[in-house]
Image 1: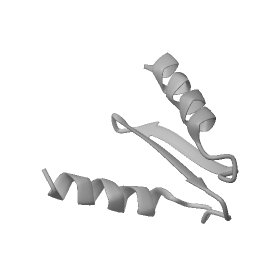
Image 2 (image 1 turned 60 degrees about the vertical axis):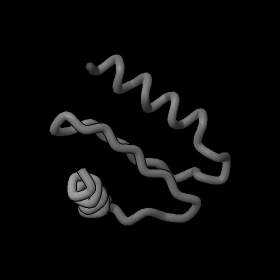
Image 3 (image 1 turned 90 degrees about the vertical axis):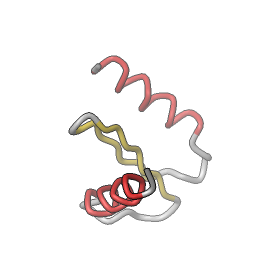
Length: 60
C-alpha cells in the first residue's frame, strides 16, 4: 500500500498544472487525497477534505 501511495503522489504531482505549487496529500482510513492550489492553503486541510468525502458518500 505504501508503494502505491508514493506512486499516486508522484503521478498527481506530475500531472498537476504548473501553477499549482502548494500541495498536500495523505492516505488515511483507507482513503487517499491530494489537494493542490495556486495560492496558499490553510494549515489544516482535513476539514475541507472530510467535507468533500461526506458529499461523495451522500451521492452514492
